[in-house]
Image (cartoon, rainbow, N blue to C red):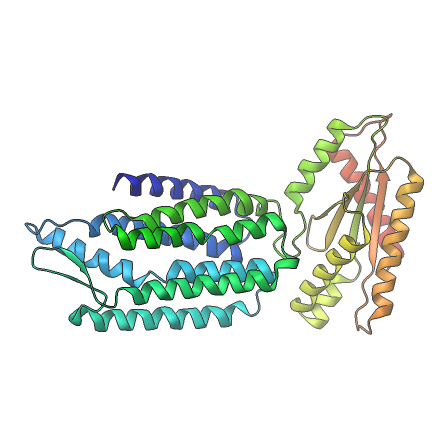
Length: 368
């Protein structure tokens, strides 16, 4: 019980931190938050399920309800994990609704079987002494959990070349702790090994993936405005005569027309395409962020205006090549404002951002 309380405390801290820095309620974030909530609930249920005192009706009732909850929700966390992995690996959300419906059906079927088993004691039964005993089909829910976890590994394997190696390792390690806990709990019932080991997995994901997501744009997968401003402040602070930098503001031309004419899905696709073009066109060390609706920013380690001009020309060339390669009804173009940061006449961060903004809107007027 003490171990459960430690785990609940850790999970509550993770839940608070995740909600505190939440930028948008999208599928991956929601899945993680619900995994935290459900695990906390199950840890509480586990504590009540271990009450064997039959001298008070409350204890008897608490034991029955808690064990029912544990079996009723035993597939919920693996289901949420499967959705989390899908959203992380494929980075698309249109098909998630279908998978949610399938997983909801699996969980409902589990609950129907559970209700039918209450009378026969297939999964478990509680005797007149308020003592829990495993039933003959106890292993079926366990196999269901393992099946869902295996599906997540299939997704990871199929997309292994497209996932960041460190995050891929974290996703692969997540199920190992609760799986080990499952087998330990089969051998030693008295401790909630599975739920407490799940806390370790949640902590692992939070530290290695969720914390990084605080600075990631949910739609494009590149850095967000918060990360951009932190990075720009760091660049200004560390600038030297031998280590200069420049920045570019970019705005998608006629983005409102794309949204109004072709719909918001086309608008989202345009934003994703813009980020892909910039990522493919620029160097690996260049910093790219989406800082607003249809606005992007790039920070580059360059020493001269000539270098910066060449990069701007390269972006124009990449966009034109994209438009020429596809017969599309709404070609992409950028308005760009760019400048070197002048170490001789240093500007505050806000002043430098305003300069870039003015230059970008000067260029935008040329595209009207």
